Image: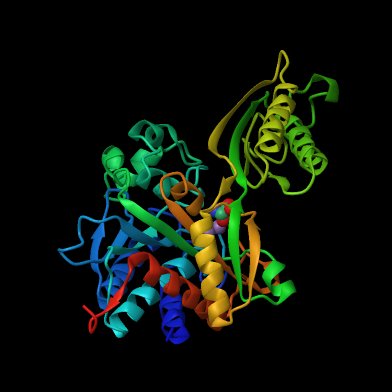
Length: 416
Ligand code: HGY
Ligand code: MN
Ligand code: MN
């Protein structure tokens, strides 16, 4: 029987590793908080009967297997342990602890998988560090190169590769991390919904069939600094004014694109950032998403056009995509299994589109993928008030556990 209290204990303990205690969870990849979290994650994986390894990026794997089945494709279950700044304690960790609880249930019930079961805690899903999320899953699925890590930069211009190296890991080995083709039988992720639907409909779990397409556009606008008092309005090349027109345009573009289309400017830096200095340079991100590929592409093109419309003899602009993942349909085999298990267990379920991006959308390019949501209180996420009751997580774990048993063709020790 799923034990919510074990999930609660692990989540509360992991949440101790935050740079902003009392102001939500801030655990960026390769931060001191992440470094403290790793031994804890490894320890609870070992206690759950798993064989633990860590890869060159700091992804942590717990494996339940036997020599007879070691060569067979893996059922991988997990999520990420990095966060957004001042985020919530469930976004990512709920999926890792769900996987761990499944492993403990195998241990409690003496279940022996006929396909290896791996629980994974992944780095850098959020993209907070280098404006390019889903980093671990892209590496594990073979879509990330060392060159990519050398090109991605943090806000101070330090490359992702240098960050990873400074944390004691090996970015130069990133291309060796990918699971070989067919090495995965399935990838399953439990995640908080991060929206209000399940709570409003009073449903226990969401079974995701589509994840919206997600993109991150990095924009740089270069103007000319000047004195705020002595420079006449007609003689300015104000980078922030240009950026503000692009930001307003992005909102209009998304509203006009209709349902399941969104655009967000969440990160913006102004240089030199003096209250009496005309902004010289502005860098900002535009997060553009849609359930429909054609609308996603059209919105990206329209936002890019609004950036270039700001260029003139005194203003230069540049933009490039740091992330682009098409809308992703998830495996009907696993969606149906989740539904069958939920119905059999008397757990109410709702078919859902995910407006949030997840590692699941990358794994869906190489294997069958299932994503199961549990409710978010008031639909809040990426915020300290993010909350999901542990009993609600436990219901999602019950469904996950049954599906993992099916996919691993688990047998009781008794009926060998
Ligand atoms: O941004 C997202 O959709 C996810 O929370 N990384
Ligand atoms: Mn997440
Ligand atoms: Mn998130």
